Image (tube, rainbow, N blue to C red):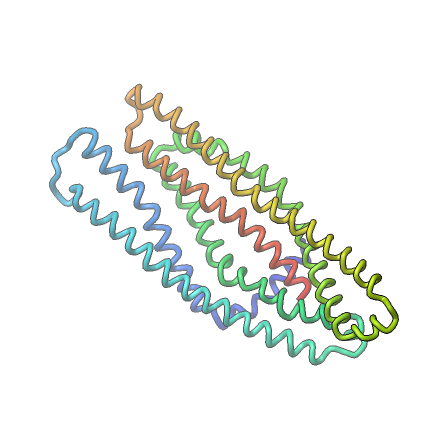
Amino acid sequence: MMNNRKGLMRLMPFLRPQLKTLILCLSMVLLVNAAELAKPYILEIVIDRYLTPMRPDHGLDAVWVLALAYMGCVAMSSLLNVTESVLVNRMGQSILMDVRKKVFNHIQHMSMKTLAHFSSGRLVTRATNDVETLNELFSDVLVNLFKDIFMLIGIVVMMLVMNWRLALVAFAVVPLIALITILVRGKLRRNFVKLKALTGRINGFFAENMSGMRIVQIFRKEKEKHDEFDELNVGYFHAARTQVRMNSLMRPLVEVVNQLGIAIMVWYGCRHIGLGTLEIGMLYAFTNYIKQFFEPINDLAEKYTTISSAVVSTDRI
C-alpha cells in the first residue's frame, strides 16, 4: 500500500502546471453540488407550505419564485457541468502528454543491461497502455472524486439539519455498503495486478514473435509458440472475465441496498406522517436525498476500480 501511495505521489508534479485549472474545476464542483442539494429542499418547501395546507401563493417565497429558483439550479448545474468536463479533459490530456514525454525520455536513457531485462513489447505496453490508463485518473476520477465526497458530506449535513431522526433511519444501511466495498475491493486489486502483468506479457510475446517469426519457422517452433500464447491468452480471458463479473456485481448490490434504505425510510416516515410528527414534503425531500446519496457511492465504487487500475499502471510506469 505504501509503494502504491509513493507511485501516485510521483505523479503529483505533473499536476503543478495545471493547478489553476484544477482549483477552478473544484470550485465549479462545489457550485454544482450546492445546486443539486438545493433542489429537494425547494420541493419540500413547495409541498409543505403550499400544496398540503393550500397556503395563498404570494410574496417573495411564492411558488413561481421557488419554481424560478429550481430552474435556476438546474440551469447552473448543467452549464457548470459542461464547462467543468471540458476543462478537466483538457487538463488530463495535457498531463498525459507530459507523462509520455517523460517516459520516452527515460527509456532513451536506460542502460543496456536494463533494456535487456525488458522486452520491447513490455516497454511499449508501459509507454502506451499504462500511460493511457492514467487518462481516466486525471480526466474523470480526480475531480469527480472530490465531487462525490463533497456531495456525500453535503447530503449528510442537509438531512441531519432538516430531520436528524429520519436521517439516522436513512443511514441505517450504510454499514452494509461499507461491508460490500471491503469484501470486493481486495479481490479487484489483486485481479488488476494480474491483468496488467498478462497484458505486458502478451504484448511482449507478440513483439518478439512477430520480429522473429522467420527463426520460429526455421526451427519448427510454431506448435510450441502457439501453446505458449494459448496459455497466456486463456489466463487473460479468465482474469478479464473475473474483472467484468466483479464490476457488474458492484452497482446492482449497491442499488439493492439503496432501495432497501428507501423502503425503510418510507415505512418509518409514513408511520410518523399518520401521527402528525412528520410532513409529506420532508419525506419526499429525504427520498430524493437518499437517492442522491447512493449515486456518489455507486460512482465511488466504480472509481475504486479505475483507481486500482491507475495505481497498478503507475507502479509499472
